[in-house]
Length: 361
Image 1 (spheres, rainbow, N blue to C red):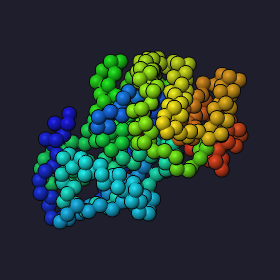
Image 2: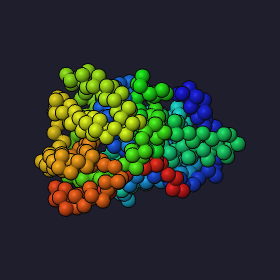
Image 3: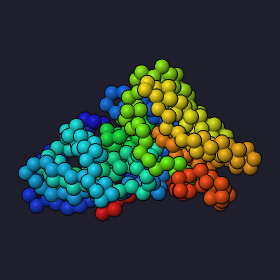
Image 4: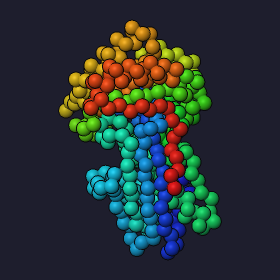
């Protein structure tokens, strides 16, 4: 696929009057089977499966114009953000073979999130996939101006999003996505994610994810650093083997609507992720006391009511509470009257499975 997209890259002269503004919104996603550990150029050590969210998203706009040399300016929520801007600029420079036209443009990037940044909700997944969609939109305009075909395929978007941020490969798909080669799903690849939307039971297509904000603070270790620590983790080989087994079993559970297996795998994967961070060198504990309090409350509530809700965690302290749509009224009442007490300023986000990126301009 890389060769195809190299051949398709716009390599011509950018017209002198070329300018405009594009905008895309892209969602975060929450992994059920976790991706933790890299190899090669942003390739996963094990496959992962995620829900695509709806309300937790990044909205990104790029204003562009022809310039004598490459120019780049990045603003996050109205303020210049050199740290994240440097990450995006590095992505552009590292992958200019795919986007050679950017060397002839001055870019002003504005981005904002609908959720707390760097607190364990996949902000890089949503922001980088939104940025890639904008970049592809600019290339599309250039190609059309020269009378060339313009490819905005989701597979291409997933491939480039992966180069920017691994988990971003999954954010461009509706409902659910699988990223990583596995013998248990035809067409799966380490290079891009694939959609699972047509291969899951209807109960999962409207699943809810209520995100309980234990802390909105910046987490103590970046996901990039956490992935790197897997290289020396003594439990890494066993983890990758377990993840592959969980992929096989979860794919079947998703197809059959088997909520018991879904719950068992999802919670086990969440705890394994944090256990791996605790066992790395240096080690990190990203859970907070109220993360554990919420986990205990959720398990007790499930046992008492038989409502099939469960938790998962990303690389942070916040708790994702997953449950079927038919249970939404009961679970949200429980959140407001019990679980919100464990949240930072009683904050939580009512989210659900969503439909992938949306064009804003």
